[in-house]
Every structure is written in structure tokens, then in C-alpha cells.
Length: 141
Image (tube, rainbow, N blue to C red; front, side, top):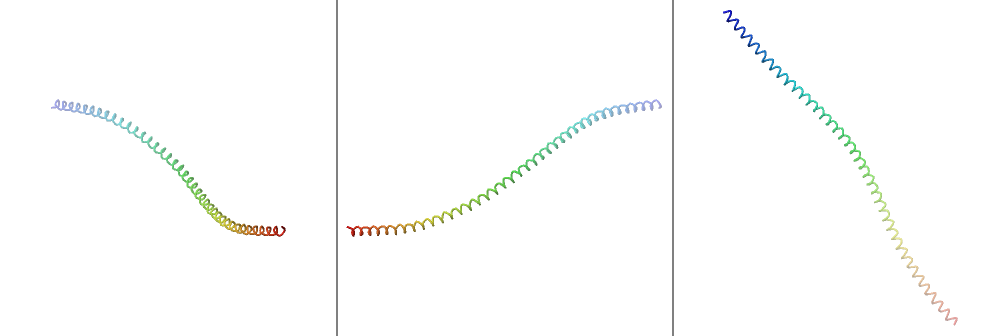
């Protein structure tokens, strides 16, 4: 019986040895997998960091562009306001010139009418004077 028990113990030792060997092989294989996964995770972390950097750069550039465009828009709005003011002033000047033209036309027409009357009066005077001269000529002859 002791020999049998010794044999069982030897068998159990062999089983333990096999299990330890299998276990160590599995641990070694899993360690390799874990190491590979850690490496992959590190690579992914680097890629994420790069993407974060790219995003940060894009946001910064975008904000700079928005700021620049806002400045341009403000400048253009200001220019448009100035041009609107200039147009309003020009409209006022045009209205004033229209009034001046209207006044000048009115005055001109009144002067022409007055001068036409004077010319007519003078023609009549000249005519009368001509008649007087003719009479005087007759008296002399």
C-alpha cells in the first residue's frame, strides 16, 4: 500500500509539474499578449494626443480667422455707414442744387420778361424818335 501511495504521490507530483508547466506557458503567452496590448494602447494614446493637438491647432486657427473676419466685417460695416452718410449728403446737395436751378430759371424767366418789356418800350421809343426825326427833317426841308 505504501508503494501504491508513493506511486500516487509521484503521479500527483507529475500532474502538478505538468500543470505548473502549462500554467507557466499560459502565463508567458498571456504576458506576451498583455505586453502587445500595452504597446497598442500606448500607440493609440499617442495617436489620440496627436489628434488632440491637431484639433487644438484647428480651433486656434479657426478662432484667429473668425477674429480677423470679424474685424474685416466691422471695417466693411463702418465703410458702408460712411458711404451711406456721403450718399445722404450728396442727396442733400443735389436737392439744394435743384432748388438753385429752379430759382435761377424763375429769375431768368422774370428778367427775360422784364427785358422783353423794356426792349418793346425802347423799340417803341426808337420808333417814336424816328418819326420825330422824320418830322424835323420835313420841317427843315
